[in-house]
Image 1: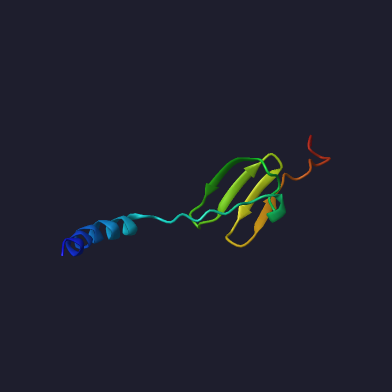
Image 2: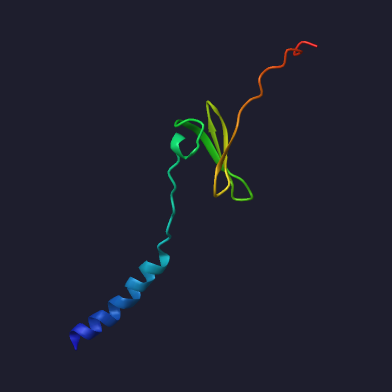
Amino acid sequence: MKKFLFILLIMPLWLSAQLNTSYNHFLHFSVKEGLSESTVMAFEEDQLGRVWIGTRNGLNLYDGEEVKIFRPQPESENKGL
């Protein structure tokens, strides 16, 4: 009987702890997955849930499925005009 009461008292505490646990999902990105460089300088999530990743070799956009790289355009020959 004591064992049953103990379990009855502990069960709500255990359930409460299980419900309050948040599960975070982490992804690992590297050059192999399409990142422009392995050293990340900054990252930010936008309002659409996309992740922008800044490296020295370009700005990367992860949309949940693939990585798209944005690099600076080569300087124009007419820059001074």
